Image (cartoon, one colour):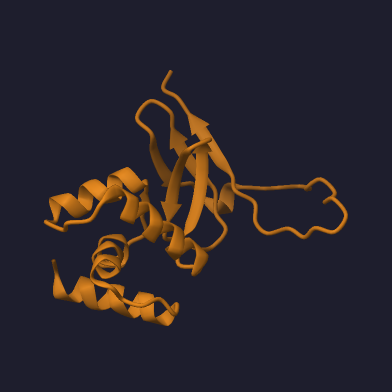
Amino acid sequence: MNKDAELRGTRWLTQAGLRPTRQRVALAALLIGDGKNRHVTAESLHAAASDAGESVSLATVYNTLNSFCTAGLIHEISVHGARSYFDTRLDDHPHFYWEEDGRMADAPVEDLEIARLPELPEGTELSRVDIVIRLKRT
């Protein structure tokens, strides 16, 4: 694995208060090591880790992604009940989701207008709004 990517991953983890274990650093390097934002599933990150020669179980990938979410490093976006994508871009933005191949990408935020949200139930506050625009080929 690229030393610069590992260093970036280690810094990312320690700034969030997470202990930089070997497996966390390896997964962090795959997620943000090149400085680009990603949308991954646990399965796609597991495959990328295997391709990079990292020995990590799928259960560890799930647990690590969940700890990254809890630490505020990534956001989870649910698409199909049990199917989730993990996004390294933390600002509020919409997503395109291609139903045929399960691909997710950022949609242009400047083209999105939300005129109004429904009144929130008593005793709650807005956490975030996830917008997934589902696409299929014609």
